[in-house]
Image (cartoon, rainbow, N blue to C red; front, side, top):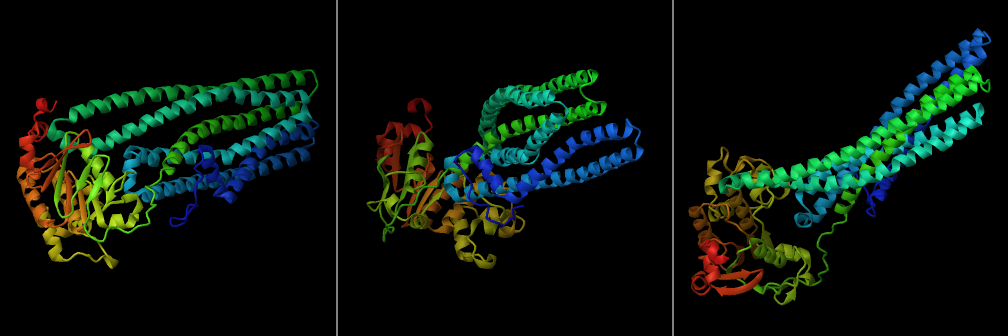
Length: 572
C-alpha cells in the first residue's frame, strides 16, 4: 500500500476510465495477485461439483467405499484450501482498494496545494469536500473488478468447459445465455451513469451551500437572512432527494435483474439437465454436477452485475476527480523583474489606477465588481493589468507575490496558537516578527483587546478558521496578519465589513497611519473608511465612473451618495 510520504505518481487525466486504469497500473503486483486469487477461488468453487460427481459415480453408485472416501477427502482438502484462498483474496483486494483510496487522496490534496490561492477561484469548496468524502470511496470500490471481476470471467469459462464434457447442449446454452443477460442489464447501467452524474452534481452544490451556511451563520443571524438561506437549502435538498430517488430506481432495476435474470436462466439450465438425466443421456453424478455448476454460476453472474454497477459509479466519480486534476494554476510566463520603485497599478478593464504611496478605496454597489478589480491587480485572474507600465503577466509571478498582497476577508486561518496564526514563523518554530512589530500591528487593527481577552494571550489556542472567535474578531486577526507581512502593495477586500461602527472608525484611522507612505487599496462601501481614503474610485457595473475624495463624490455624484447612505430607492 502507498506510503504516506511516497510520491503517488502522475495520474492519467485523459478520462474517467483511464484514471481507473492508472490506479490499477500503480500496483501491478497486487492487482495481478488479486486477479489470480479471485480466479483460483472461483475455479475451485466450480471444482466442488466436479469432485462430488466423481464421488457419486465412482464411489457411491458402484459401492466402492475407498474411492468414495478418497473423493470425500479431496472435497475436504479443496474446500479448506479454498477457504484460505478466500481470506487471502479479501485481504489483497482490501489493500488494492485502500491503495486506490489513499493514492487518490494524495493526488487531490497535492492538486489543491498546487492550485494554492487559485483553488477557490477555480472550483467550489463543496466540490472538493464531496470528492474527499464520497468520490474517493466510490473509486476505490470500483477496483473490485480487478479481483472477483476477473475471477468471474475465468470461472465462467471453466464451468463452460466442464459442461462440454457433460453435454455440449448445456455448454452452448451457458456460453450464449450469460452474455445475453449481461447485455440486457447494460442499458440500465448506462442510465445509472447519467442519473448518478446528475445526482453527483447536485450533491456538490448542496455541500457548498452547507459550508457557506455554517461559515456565515453568525452573520446571517445578525442580518436576519438565515431564513432565506435555509429556504434555499431546503429547495436544493428536495431536488437532491428527488434525484436520489431516480438513482435508486435505476439501481433497484439493476440489482433486481442481476439476481432475477440469472436465477431464471440457471433454472432453465437445471431443467434441461434434469430432462437429459431422465432420458439417460447423462448420469446421476453428472446431473448433480450440473446442479453444482449452476449454483456456482450464480456467483460469477452476480459479480459481473455488481462490478458493472460499481464501475458505472466509479467512472462518474473518476470523471469528477479528473476534472479537478485538470485545473491549472495561473501560468507563470513572466520573465521581467518587478519595478524597482513604487509604481502605478493600472487595470485597463475597469479603468482603475492605484497610485503609489496612497490609500485608495474602491466602492461599488456590487462588491464583487470591486473585488474582481483587486483580483486582476494581484494577478489571481487573467487580466491586462500593468504595474509601472509593464503587463503583470510579463513579471515573474514570485516577485508579484513578494511585493503585492491580496488580503481576502475570508482568507483561511489555520489551527494553532494565536501568535502562530498571525505572525510568520522561521526555523524551529521561532517567530520571525519582533514583539514591537506584533504590538504595532495588533494596535493598528484594533485587535489588542482580542489578545488581552484570551486566557493565554497570544499563546491561546485557535480552532481551525478561528471558530472560537467572533466574525469581527476573525476579520481583525486577518488584518493583523496582512499588516505584519508589510507588503509594498496591500490590496484588502472588505477589511471592516463585520465590525461595529466604533471599531470600524478606529481601524480606518489606524490603517491609514500604519500604511502611511505605502500603497494600499481597499474595497468598501463604509463612509467611515471612505472618509479616511486619499482617493475614492466609484465603480458602476465594474467600470470607473468617478474619482475624488469622499466629500467631493458626496457632492458631485448622486449614485455614490445613495450608495454610501444605503438609499436603495435612489440607487435604483
